[in-house]
Image (tube, rainbow, N blue to C red; front, side, top):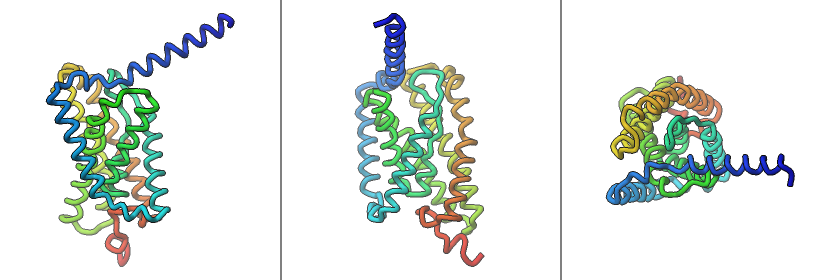
Length: 244
């Protein structure tokens, strides 16, 4: 084997080790036994409720199943474009609000869970962080997005622009903010990093994704409700479009 080949293999090997070492979430190592039990319990409860409340009958239609899987794969690809300054805290778009508005909160949680599992397999990281990551990146933003939708649906008139602006644009931005602040609080309370470091190297940068998340979600939802309203479970074209 030539020196060039040996150097190439060494570089690849070191690069692989570095990638795998940085993908291990150091948050879990700072959890006490009680915190780990609480995290796994909340995760199990959230997943059980999502599986129980998910409208599985919609997936009997092969088109609906393909759309759901296609959107999950799309979110998975978006998550690959991420940045980060400190270990364990990566910055990327979520896509949770888009999944919530299109398929409901239950399928949104399950979809993000699948995305997390896929990324952990590809990164070769441990599974210990799966519960807390699911709670922070799936359950919290999905709950916020669906709560905003319910409030808008009950309290405001059935208007197309109200639906897009408040549910898609504002809902997506607020969901990102909730996930970012929830992540910040967990890392600070768990004493993983000082509060000032988390704010300086993560929180203030992660909040900048609110605008692109809101813009992309609003743009996609605008196209879907106009051209494919049957794809959006939270949108009724008889209420929002017809007769106007």
